[in-house]
Length: 96
Image 1 (cartoon, rainbow, N blue to C red):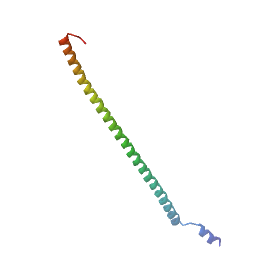
Image 2 (cartoon, helix red, strand yellow; image 1 turned 45 degrees about the horizontal axis):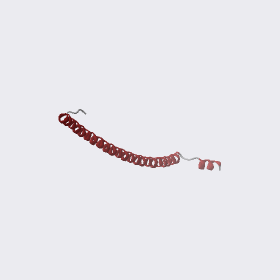
Image 3 (cartoon, rainbow, N blue to C red; image 1 turned 30 degrees about the horizontal axis):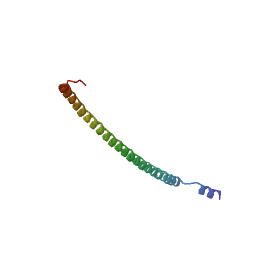
Image 4 (tube, rainbow, N blue to C red; image 1 turned 120 degrees about the vertical axis):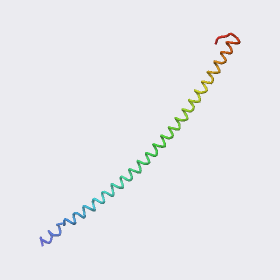
């Protein structure tokens, strides 16, 4: 009877290997699901970051355009003021 009981308690090498294979498969599947979830979160984060960068680039482009327009307008105004000064100096002999 003790021999029979001992045989039941002994697990064959093949059974241990099968159990370890099952356990490994379960662990790898769980890790794969976790990694897939992390990849999705990373892709979502990357998309949000790219959208933020695009908004920032658009804002900077608009700001740069305004600055360029203002500089151009300033140059025109400076030219016109210098022209008026020349006319005043020539016609009225006045220095401004």
